[in-house]
Every structure is written in C-alpha cells, then in structure tokens.
Length: 258
Ligand SMILES: [Zn+2]
Image 1 (cartoon, rainbow, N blue to C red):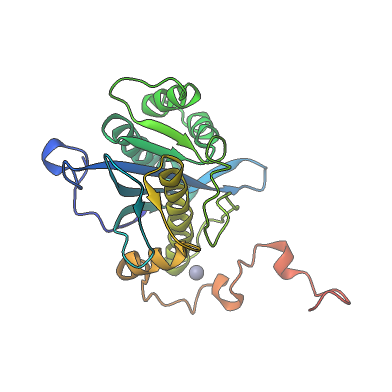
Image 2 (image 1 turned 30 degrees about the horizontal axis):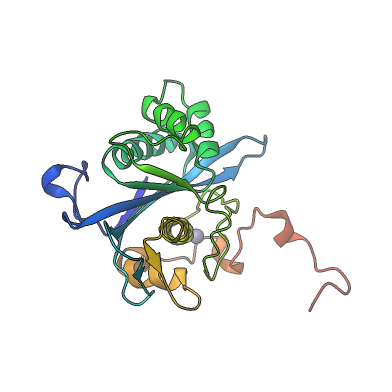
C-alpha cells in the first residue's frame, strides 16, 4: 500500500487541536475511489483519494485559481489485490472522520463506491455502512454531520468549468512505483475536480475561465508524485499504455490512423 499525501497530521486528522484550517474556515472533503475490473468481471478498488478544501464559513463565494488555491490531499494506492482489505480500512476511517467533523462531504456516485466496498469485505465495514445510509438520505440535514453533495446527482448541473470530465475511468493494478504514482495523480485530479464542483454547488468557490485541475495537482503534489523511479523494467512504460489492455495489442486497422 502506497500513500501520497501533503498532510502533516497523523492518523486522526480531525482532532480539535489538529484541525488543519483553523476556526474561520469550514472544511470540504472530497472522497473518490478508483476501480479495476478483474477478468471474472468483479471489481476491485485500486485507489482511494481524499482532497481537503478550505472554504469560507460566511459571505460570498471566494474567487480561487489553480495558481493560488491551497489543498490538502491523501491518496492510497495498492498494487496487489491482497491489499484490498487494508485499502478499505484506511478509506473507511478517513471517510468516517470527514463525515463527523468536516462540514461538507463530496463524492461522485459515492453510494456506489460504498456499496462495492461493503460487498468486498468479509467483516462488516460499519463506518462505510453508516456513511452509505446517510448518503442515501442526504437531503435530510443531520445535526452535527457534514452536508453531503453528490456531483453525479444534485451537483451534476452546477456548470463548473474544469479541463476534465469527473466520471471515473477504469484503472489497472499498477506494475511499478511509477505506475502507482500515475494512478495517484489521476485519482487525486479527479477527486479535486469533485471537490471543486461541490464547492461551486454550495456557493463557496467561484473562478474565471477554465480551472486546470491537473495543473494544481502537479503543483501541490510534485514532490510526492514524482518518484524518480526506474521504469526500464516495467512493461507498461514501453508504450505508455498497459500491455494487458487488449486494444493496445491490436494492430492498427486500415484507415484507422489519423
Ligand atoms: Zn510502471
């Protein structure tokens, strides 16, 4: 299990003394999971991501930009199906904390992610089940719990201008440290896009023109995402696409080239 984060706080991020953003601010947490499809059609999680955005408690929407916005992030990536259980445990813990102590929790069809998570676990994932139940009834505001925003449902028509789609794309199990960092980079970028969409939907953020989401992740995460790992022995790096992808192995068809 690999972790990519810029957070200084340890296991319990939301302790009273460790609140990352101070009392003038609310915290918006975005949570996304990336999945791979196994040969038998089953789905396994490859990565879970959390992006923490500082949003104003009161007043008009804050003007933000990709050059100046500060974010906290944490991505967990596994490269072996044997580590799914560990990934689920960490994800559940972070998610429960975000729901209890954050003010806004954002996901993109998070209910589907949580249902898949609980189906994969031999023992009950109580935190995930709890969040899933609350997510389903998220139109009912619960005292002391985060407001929940689904960017695939109520925030789908928010009209944010991002340089990428926020629907998930299938990932593969990474083959080497550099592949794992690439998964983390894509996962964090999508997670930030979900967070930004929710921040616009809740009227906390606004920006001019198109927000370059990947550029912000590169800036915020360059030191942890650029591993400098040797990719010479990794088959996925010869062509830039995973070799197990059948499309990549098919010869180009006549007229198929541009
Ligand atoms: Zn690789």
